Amino acid sequence: MRKPFEPKKLEIEKDLEGLSLKMLENHYKLYEGYVKKTNEIQEKLLTADKKTANGVYSEYGELRRQETFAVNGMKLHEFYFAALGGDGVPHGELVAMIERDFGSMDTWKEEMIATGMSSRGWAVLCYDFGDMKLHIYGSDAHNVGSVWNCALILPLDVYEHAYFIDYAVDRKTYIDGFFKNLNWDFLSGLITKWGLDKVSE
Ligand code: FE
Image: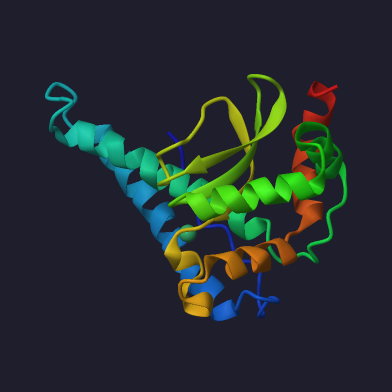
């Protein structure tokens, strides 16, 4: 039996350049909600009636449908917050992989921004084991646009709750603030932690 998930601590304790602590703390509360709902749904799935499972409506079916929303909401926000709090200066293994797969850091950033401006939920940089390359995928909700067999690396949250407190409807300036605070030790650390630099060779 697995233990309930615990929310990961928000490591940011002061205003970041372009992202206020007030906004990040409010956003973090939504993340805590996804952790809570993941635990609640997975607990209920243990006892929900499997015999009446049905694609139109059933307790089991509704729990399964909402489970992916809650679990992805939890995971995406964990990577989002962990990727912030740095100096925004790209370095490490991930930079080499981005240059290899996108041509240049500028091209990659331009694609992340355009995906963020055109998605309703997330622009996600991930490593796709299908072709062993980095990809950006757009997502209109936590569980819409998710692509299988990918390692999540950098999710950019473009839901309005991610920027409305500081920026009202100015999503573009919020995205600039996001890039200014990226923690490249964390991001490049993922590549080495998971051995993706080895499998890509
Ligand atoms: Fe969010």
